[in-house]
Length: 259
Image (cartoon, rainbow, N blue to C red; front, side, top):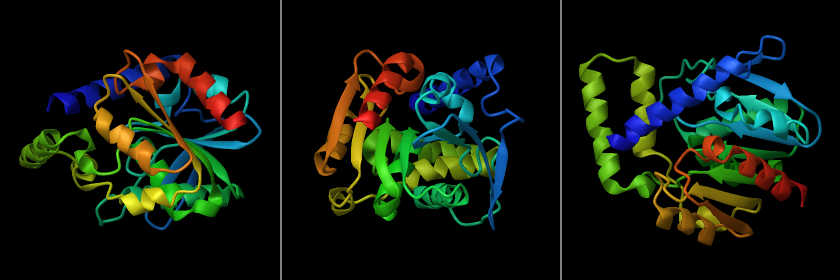
């Protein structure tokens, strides 16, 4: 439960930065991709090689308030609100999945006529990046993940059990269905196998904080199973690397993608 509270506080903290910028609320550049069962809100900044920014569970574009200004000097940044989050909607009735999120990324890339993309994904966004690399290898250049997991127990078995209890609680409190579905997503997803990781062709940069919510052993497992991947642990950082180590992260992203 403590970890979930931390996630909520972390999201609230990132939202606070939106007060000093228009990221996620920029009417001048904001657009909507209309899909059959969702409207996907996105903003584009800069020019050059395309880099998609994917936020975490319950977050929004403004999670990358500290990254967009610098990264947009080097790349064409496509920052999007994942379906059922931020300004994006969702009318589907099936459970949310990271594969579905990856399909939305592909749909937006197609809309923008981008054949091959890079992805920087934080938390759930990292999970989506991995799913994208698995399902769309020909459309993936490189992926960078921070605090990602490839199966639910990556956060620890006890935490998954706590989330199940939280679902029962918020159902009893008649909380919005969207909140319930997003929490259930973390309980049952992702379901990425070792074989799938072994077949990823894109170069991958797997990041985590020294005190991340994701177990260190799980992060190391991801790196061990993805060919052409490398690992970096940010000393002293928590699950919030893009906030706590923004300047260092920007340098690392630029260095990795420019090689």
